[in-house]
Length: 594
Image (cartoon, rainbow, N blue to C red; front, side, top):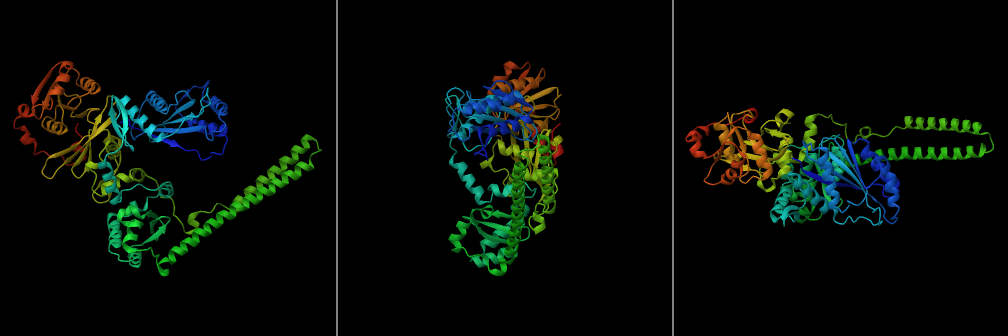
């Protein structure tokens, strides 16, 4: 499932000269890379920073000539180094940067395989700067074309992928997409802001809305819905242990005990400040007795910042004192012998190091917990890490909206496959490697996820299958033309090929000793070759559920297979389908077909 995402890493030190920015970037990217490739540069990557600095000097007006870009692959994806380098070069070509100097470094030290691209925006011959106008759209177009060139499923983006005149292009999203986004925001499914991610996630703490139970969230919504004035709202939220505070142009909901907060809009669009202003009038803060605890917390935070400022000032004063001492010593030893002068300088340096060490020991860095703020870092374990990583998926599962057709795409199905699932009300099940290597995964609530694997056993798509109350199966398979689904033993003597996932599951239940292959009705060349390699010399029966749904599949595969027959499902199995309807799979082990 080799989906690609591109992200630009903006420099935080744009006042630094180009030599420093190039050297720092290249040292970081290439220092721990497993493979490095350079373009339009001589020598290896250790010589790249100097060459890029000299080239950047041809355009002195360009403030930041270093363009840092990262291409990332999803969880569980292991593309080969050659594929990563080829993908990076294709993306550089989409930026019109093939003639510019660049360094590509592949990293495999994180959960997601990724590669860094450091591009010099100054042309080595003309000195012209590479235009970055609408680079977000060009990068997304490059990713979609990379996925199409390698036969990978498309990842989610801000644009819709379109096939126009034989080329992959970007098109605006449909009105249905924006309606689904609006409905998700109204239900409280909006992303975490950057400030909240930085404070909570990096500290190992869950965002406030993820720490609250479904009952707690419902109680908060009910308290705000039933309030007829701002004072009543503050009183009701205070009874829930929360506060509604104005913050900048919006509002926050803050926990009284921990100080954790979340934007009010994360409860839903109807709980944001503009909606409440239109319903309750101008904002009125909480009364004094409700705000006392918040004032106490503000005083503690102010004391914490004062302590940090005092420590910084003490270090600055000591450094200023040391600078004056070095200047006085330089004047004193001006006429002395070189060895004597070096001895004095060495003694002063050791004394200054000892002074700085003593200051840091007597005035340690203030910690939030010493002032009653924040909290200790919570212990890390695989379950907690998985919950943090897939928190947005769990929020949707908690709303029982996991199988809504409005937002089903490859990205969401991949997250369902690798992320935890809800078991009961609040228990979580984190998948292990053995379960992910099985034929399918049980998501609970009579829903299973069936992977479509490519030739290298990587998943290139997923089929989401849900059993309806009437016993019928609903299948959502957005990438059915990229790879095959397989059910049953790989060493079976006979193979069955179908063009429908529902029919494939039924055939597998009826014939557990056969290998069932689910393909698309009109398979592309790559999928047809994969099916033939999987079948080998075994006899094959292509089964159709209707009169003509597998005719194209039979016409495409029959010349490539040695022994191939075409049968309808009713003719091939007769009344056995009635008996198989009584068979039900209830647990994940049973649903992982052998």
